Length: 187
Image (cartoon, rainbow, N blue to C red; front, side, top):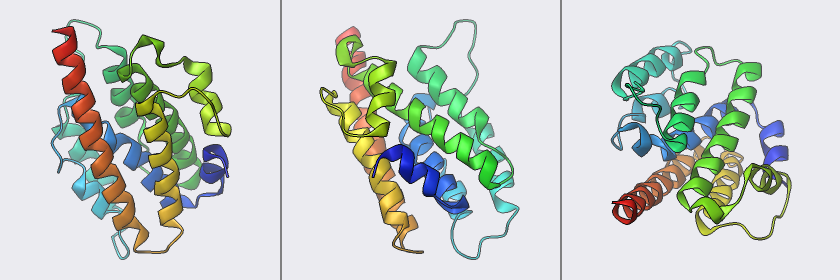
């Protein structure tokens, strides 16, 4: 099943986890540490109060550096900033569906950008979400696999949230290493 189909079939919680997982993997671009989104993850656990999501989202926004400053941020940072800014305060299926879809695209685009200018264009990023695509860069292919895995592990029930968090943690480490490599390369 394609990533687009998996997102379309996800329930409200699955959509929230899908979007949050994409954002979580891109947190290093926003200057966040590994724990900055942990309370937001907690709001998706079984038994969490319905209002926890909105409150914890605002706390996360306050802790992450989303100011653009005098200069326009590079494209990957701007994409991560938009993911955070677009997160819906209300956990409704309609709002979360649009957010999860846009986060999926943004995270894939970020990973393609980090692989370099020759890594692929927006058309390839969109195409890989709809089915098998050839010629994906290593970071892009890995991010696509992570997004599919997150949605697959959520189908395992309540324990799936922990699996999704583990996938995101590993992806965050990979992105942090890619950013570090790019910074060393570009000086």
